Length: 196
Image (cartoon, rainbow, N blue to C red; front, side, top):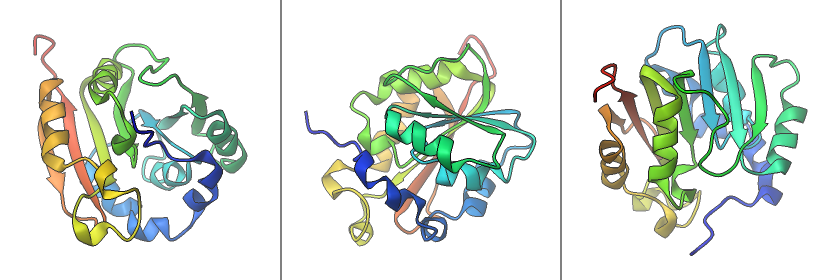
């Protein structure tokens, strides 16, 4: 199996302020369209650079920021300084050490293309989301014009494939956005009906 994971040795590029132009936090937050979340989970938070920028739009929320790489968790701890509302955590792949129905919102940014077993993680996310909770996925687009940055095009996941994964794991109200030049965005919801 090809290793598609980001090399932690290159983590400095994750702190490049230019990333906030490529992935504008305000546009992301407008797409999420959630009012006053209390508990947010970030999976694959890396250095927490984007995490911190997005957390400014939810000042009343606490963000649990997860990564599978110890060096990334250390980097988060070093970077977060003034952000007392973000807690870095090490996680095992596809396992969130959180209780059921914990989070109002979960996001994965530039992680989906790295997943070897997305269904397992999507089921785990569904478990930790509250009924009506939202899942945001932003990942690299497969469009040829987005090839100049990011992972190889063959590692990227087509929007239709991600959508089918979400449907098969019983997420609903799936919407997409073309707001980002090099990325695609999907937003899905956990049903409020426990029988669904």
